[in-house]
Image (cartoon, rainbow, N blue to C red; front, side, top):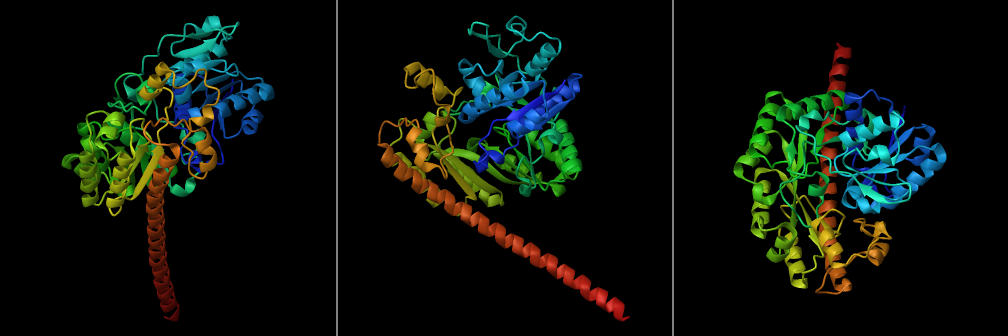
Length: 469
């Protein structure tokens, strides 16, 4: 039996090509470790996957690409008559949106759920009666009634899950020039931000891979892919200070700090001198944190009471003072935000331009599964059923004219036109930092070229001398 995987993306959106579909890689690795089903294929287009003739298809989708996934499922049903399972952040956050194009939706963590679905399909039990005993799914009955099974209990310990099948998906997705491999060392986050669905997707408390597991996966990556850098895509890589310190000890003792540089996400109120020492010891070169806003009241609305603008400023200065490259992301457009609040954020970005290596500014989007989504659904501000999922998008760059036409603007204190004025000033700051970064990269490349050329010239001089003798 052949299982086929597909990631629902919009190919012309460059950013979507930069993130490898690790979730599908984990599903493949889990099946290969715990079942007899090892004939698994991955494709980047419907046509490519259809030509591989899978018997069962799994598609993963975020909300802005959910309609892409629906179209892919319809085409695959026609081209290869294979049943289709949908998983990923969107269906987890909005299981009531399950389209008839899909047989089943996987809600939440997928490894064990998908294993049970595969075994049910292989045994010929592919019907609502069989699905009712599988936790963590949604499906429709023969008459179209939407049903949900019990929530799936998250797998524990996390080390039970093998590293993702990078040979299936390719380590760099479509961006090999980065020479960086993506990696996850935990699932979930101890905090609840109003715009984040992590707690919905990874139900329960955060779970962490052991330092030993992480180092073993790093060795596997180095041996197979030979990258120069690793990007940890954990929601919060430094959440556990003790684990961070133990991991740094292992990475240094095994020489991985000399082979690789690392990049991760942090949280401003968790940046301490000890954590920074451990980060530097293991050769973390850059870290991003969600500053979100320089307004105390907006930041409280977005992230709660544990962090304030002074934490953001202190974290930025502490990281920059050690030589670690700090980057920040911001979320603008909260319902209570005013022009004065946006000006504070703009001033923060300009004031810290010399410290930042990058800054990204995102309009607030109420993705399914987030606390904000739930609030808006309950208040009736998001009409249901939703007819246009593509409006829940962050693809504003290069798509501004059409983005704003469908953007769900939630702010109550200024017109959209006034908001856009501030937003594009913030985007200008982002672009200035991006240009500076590219210039620095180009200068570094020139220096490396000059150094290499000097070495070659010296080799040539020695060879000529040897020939003369």
